[in-house]
Amino acid sequence: MKNRLAVCSWSLQATNAKELVERIQQVGVKYVQLALSPVINNPEAWKDLDVLFKNAGISVISGMAETIGEDYSTLESIRLTGGIVPDAHWEGNWKHFQKIADLAVSMNIKLITFHAGFIPHEPEKDEYKKLRDRIVKIAEIFREKGLILGLETGQERAEHLKCFLESLPVTNVRVNYDPANILLYNNGDPIGVIDILAKHIEQCHLKDATRTKVPGTWGAEVAVGTGEVNWPQFFEHLNKIGFKGDFSLEREAGNQRIADLLAGRQMAEKLMQ
Image: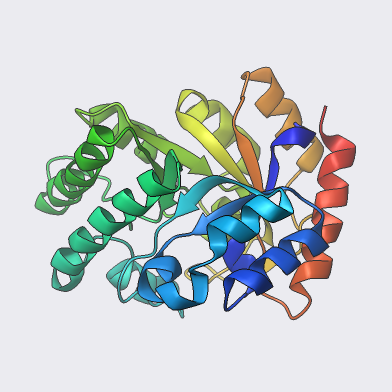
């Protein structure tokens, strides 16, 4: 497992390629999950990325795509604005995902993850069918290019996500499992979710959180190893199901990102077999 440990590029808050390489090196890993939307939206800042990665011996294990207009200020705001659910941004998001696919191919990246938005619980509802059709449309263009689409976890219970995945007529939609999101959205037990989604998990984020004590509000994202994820059980369960994918350290809050990610890396390495 230690040889499959990466860091999420967006956690490092770099504004250009040189900064990103320097901060990856400070965390002490050789692999990165790369946010692809900034590379598309600001190509000048990232134009030397491939060369700098090669010179530093850094490999990209996967990509991440952002969607337009997301507002994470409250649970209700992200429910309304998250992922590819909003009709107002669907055409823009569809065009962006086509660019994401082309960039991934050019960089030899096979897996691209993103937050699709809240999946409705009732398959018979129009909102469910609309989101399903949009994910299938993206997945099909990805499949044509040999790519895998990874859905982030947490915004719905694992049982609902499993049913949704198994209803899709495509086979290249998988799961990027983030145990902290289960706590942040208060949607179950992070360890039990592994068993529910076992055959769908393609990659894992190493992120930690504490569960909210006020229903309808966010939990708190914290440094890996300081929250409520039971990390020994986490790695034990992944070993049990025969998980062979990669792990990417993520930190989305705090003002000492590199120190937190470095501590998280050291904790994970002690537990990884």
